[in-house]
Length: 460
Image (tube, rainbow, N blue to C red; front, side, top):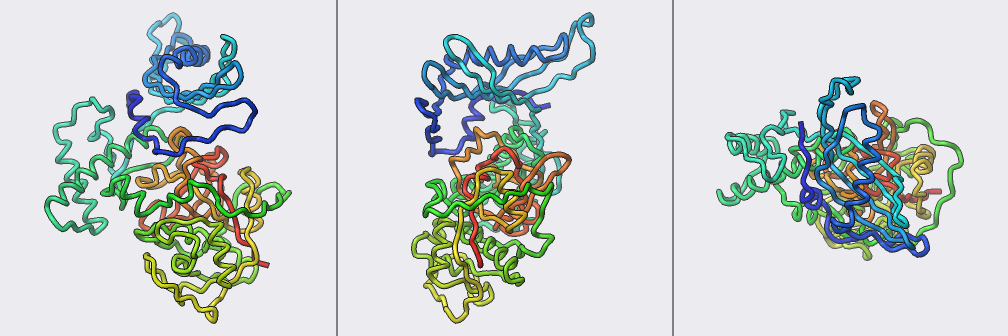
């Protein structure tokens, strides 16, 4: 069973830069990190309130605590993350039912005003630190759960074997023995990091070995993500009207012929182009009945506002398509994964768009719009995706902030798995990543900013 996680782990997982902007209500300040001494009273109050709901004789012992504070008027709002050991009852006279010992990760929101406290939100879930290798073998017994844990005797033997399997599976070659040793050390650190992400995920996702496991976090961000997205949506678009009708219980445009095969952007931060062409492909199919695989390379080469492999914004890409006069197909303008001289030919245009629109931030309205109008271009925080294997991802909001969006993708459907609501997301990292190229993210909680930058082209 997992033990409590030290605060340094939570801090180590936080993405850099981009602090959350101030909330808009009058008199309120922005969220800020809270010093440990400020957290004592709100944490004690939250734990006392939580303990009242325990079975008779049960008790909790707090572990790691992290939090931030937002001041408004004479009060303060605390957002807390606390790990708890829920200990079994040892008093036979008080125990009603046997309760096994377990570790929980809890999030609380506590309002403190004029010396009084009120618990506004509470959510607790079990910590599960199990991660998987390529052969679905459980790796957790071989990985240190705490920074202070001693390494198992056969740790490096096990890691060397796992790294060798990784090299074979993903056909890796390294130029020198020194580089191979360096990549193995990166791989081991990544396996430990994946375990931390696994332990803090509240969904059903599994994290572990992927084709990106020998890349440092900085390399992964540089080669595969899009730093320009965190600056906001860019060009202002018209806000679309609500559909009006409620969303069906589930929907999947893949089953209705509106989605092309999963593509691969390679080591190029061109996700913005893949997100937009995926949306336009769906819009054209719904209006004209033809599903065409459209050219991302045309946008990489010919969009003069965006930055090719250095990133871009969907709003700019829609404008570029209108300015150019349309999109060629992938067959006519094939993808190279790097910036080339623009070789756009108006004679080869197969698809055009008339306009582009911004969509609602409400996830119910997004679902209704998607079911009625087709796949949606969105952008998300890619926290944990370097090690995502399958399942429904639901990272802590603290770790996957909607204010730090860095990857553009395509929303193609939604539904439920074992009563867990999800968004089905088409990625652009090839079919050898995730669930055959797809990512599943929790629906209804604004997870990782899934609802923050939704847009679509309009084809009349």
